Image 1 (cartoon, rainbow, N blue to C red):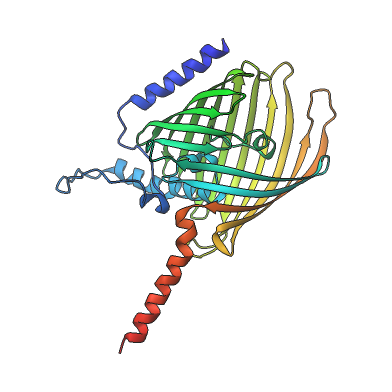
Image 2 (image 1 turned 120 degrees about the horizontal axis):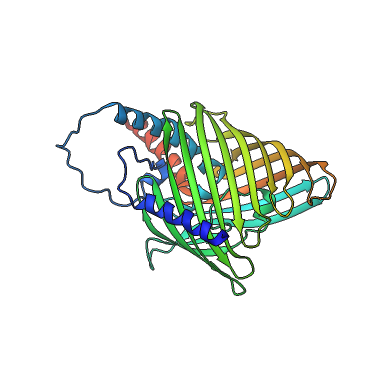
Length: 352
């Protein structure tokens, strides 16, 4: 019954993807991706369709909700953003985590994707969590994987990918569907559904829904929900979280500083339904020295129990992270700015 339910969900998703794109389809590109998104299709400049309230609403939603959401996802290194970026993007994380119950743990992790244009422009090599779902620190430790991902097709609001995990001990084929778009002038949604098969876990499906609300030009409120259901899961494994991301510096500034206030709750439904953890915390993230270097501090308080019969404990957790974004635009942006400044100074000196 579980497998049939998973299959029906994916068939319905694929049917929605296959429908003609709507007039309010939304798939914005960030400034970095616009320069590498390929040749634009031919457009008849003489054709000027009438502008109505639908066009106005779509334009405003694109600028307000989707643009800020994508900026925040790019800044925080959201897995969905990385695997759908217009070019290769790798992130190298050096993290130290202190947990009141589990003491210290240090870890180095590579994530992101590499394009393989010599084989196919649609084929990518993806590191760590190829499904692109939001993962907490505990889940990230279990998702250090490598996979091939093939973009079957992409339209204004939808995208369909096939994946194949690369591991000598496991065979992990999967399919992933994404749909996103505006809800209101300042709100947007994102839906992701994935069906995966693994040797030791059988079939399982992962669904994620995000709702974004722009409060002002520097504040984004997000409500995210995630469900995992499969042959070997503890019933339905679920998580729900609310976050407020606030940009504290003007986007024109060279080094950005963002604070993320968040709370989340997660649990399972079978064989015993219970809540595993209530979490409340804040995440400080800023660029340091260069635009491709990020420094992060994430303290949180967790009220958790690992098993249904355990007593619930209050536990402090602190994660400190240094991240290097290995992307062409970020690597060379400072050099380009220096060249531009030198050229301006030279022009000023030559002026009479």
